[in-house]
Length: 452
Image 1 (cartoon, rainbow, N blue to C red):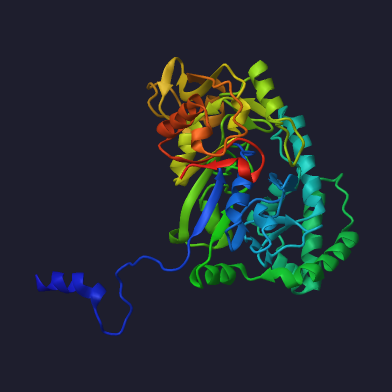
Image 2 (cartoon, one colour):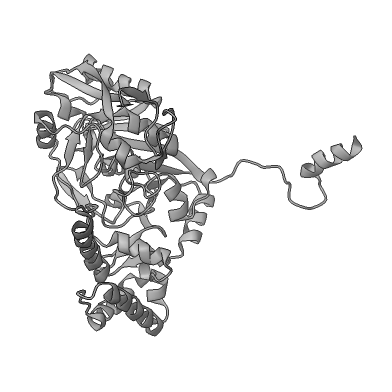
């Protein structure tokens, strides 16, 4: 009895050591904004809104394959690598360890461990797409920004970081040449001006040197110092996550909430609100399954009214109805505090609006979003099937709602929205189990209606 008591009381022992009882972490928490579909949801607009009151705005993963559009005072800005919050002159913009960067034109707060995208990474990205098309009859549909090859170099431990560039340049040059030769051996047609690129890189090194910080210490001090509002902007989107997305038609980084911790060196207990950004319909750029896609006049209308062209690639976006099955799946991974529902105004002209609420396979409902391998609630003769194969085959069950047939672009508060538009928003909340905090009805900051 006494032995058990002594064991239980060790956490409060006052012999000079640290208490073992777990306590709540002190300090600041980061607010996270993530894409909840296949990208292009309007994350930049939400970040821009929150950044007006933020002290630090961070990017944690991806590279210049992202494309975020922000409109301020009638002027449109397109960002690819910089956090959208850079528009706020009072906030520090920080690019974290998980980001890969293409150095030309980079004049921003950087971190010493970022991996660098070289020109030949971009060339290899294009060559790999050509190779896939020739061998498999299809490609992935990458942005050809060199992101995949750069993350591949990182995983193979042959990649080069900002800290390498800023230390011994002779050692950096030797490793650069080795990396270039590796790619030339894999792709004999690849041409690399090694000496020309090294000359450029040496010049870039001196330009960015004053902007480089040790990211771990920078974030630790930000989290544990004086009160600060810290905002993290996710790039790409959850369904493009390398581990949880619709593989292989995904990006090369973790676009879900875990990428915040690994990309910035932020402990999980310092993650505060996580906001998911979702369009009032669904779009996707490139190849891959898209259950609610509308290859008809509805898809054309959404594409036209929504000006659905990729910011980074200029490619036409595929369009379809809102998919709540995938949205619930994404919420399971990220634990959203609230949602931002954007581009509601694009639906203003429709007589009726459909929302995907379930998937059917072989005429039977499947109560899940197909993961990497799916063998749930199927008969004994079925075998594990990769998610792409299932997603290509599923039939979507829709809930049909009446359109509001009213211009919502002038709405600035909840009461300004037509009752049928309010019902649409409440339907999303009820199905997903997450409240909608913002509703977007236009491009500008003022067009984001805050509900609470």
